Every structure is written in structure tokens, then in C-alpha cells.
Length: 222
Image (cartoon, rainbow, N blue to C red; front, side, top):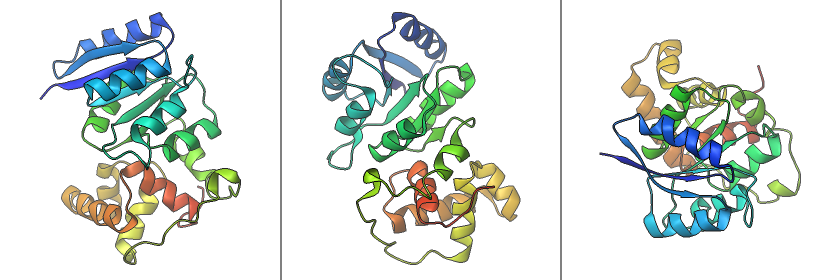
């Protein structure tokens, strides 16, 4: 299966660099490019790519609003949006995740991590740049501003102790392999726990699980 990509960035040089990196992969194809947010949303809705790579600061419509229109809670058939930006700002990451993004990377990330994030997004999972994961998500815990006025629904079922242990490790940025090693369980067991957690929290991806953990004081910063 070929992963179809939409690239949206107002800088030609950035789009060219990403196109070259992703074009070296036999399972990835860039099918569209856009230099502003409005064009990105229009092309994404028309082509329905597997992954939309969006910059944040773009003309006409910024990447955060474009993410909401393509992947937000009100979207019936959301697309997979991966934010790739220069700006390592907590507010941007928070809004991107709330608007439905399934990943957040910095533009200086390695080519290998970019490819890994694209593949993760295409599979419905998520990846946040290791340079920002824990710091950014941990800042969700004490936040009580206008962005968090909506009261979250409790889990449909209580999480078990083992599920909570998995959630804590996810919230601290550990991969499934690392979680399996720390808990002395198999990788398939970790995936089963995460699937159960996702169902109970009505979370759409791994990022939302981690964000829920920090917002609800399930874990504390390390």
C-alpha cells in the first residue's frame, strides 16, 4: 500500500526538502502540495490523502485552524494530520492536539523521524518529536485557561492498574517496545492494553491518551 501525502507549507524550499526525503521511500507518494491553508484544506477534502503534513504559520488559514477543519472533533470522516513546524511553542502543540492532529514534529527533525511519523499517522497511531513530548504534554496538567473550559467525560469504564501503568509510560514518551520491557510483558499485550484504554477514553490516538493522562493528574512530571 502506498501512503499518499499532502504537503502544505508556504516555503517552497521546505516543501522541496520534504518531497525529496519522502520521495526516497517506496511506500510514500506526495500527491499534492499547497502554499497556504485554504488551498491545503480544499485539496485535502478533494483528494483525501492518507496523511496531511501541515505547517502552522501559513497565509489565508493557519495550520491549526486547517487541522480543526480536517481532523477536529466535529469532522465526520477526519483525516490524519501531522503538524511539522519551526515553532516549539506549548500553545501551538496544545491547540494542534485539541484540533485533532495525530503528530507534532519540528522542522529540524531527522529524515528518519519524519518518515516514521508519516507511517505512524497513516496507520492511525501518532508520534510527537521526542524533543518536546514530555515537556509539552506535562504542561497540560496545571492548565486551567479558556482552552480547557470543556469538561471532559469520565472513562466509560474504570482503567485497570495495568492499563494505568501503560498510560503513565505513554504519557512520558515511551514506545510500545520500551513499555513492554519495563512491564515485563509482550508487545502484543501492550497493544491490547492501549486498545482497551483508547476505547474507554474514547481517544482517537496515542497522543490523546497521553494528553488525558496529564490533564487528569494520572501521572506527574519526571
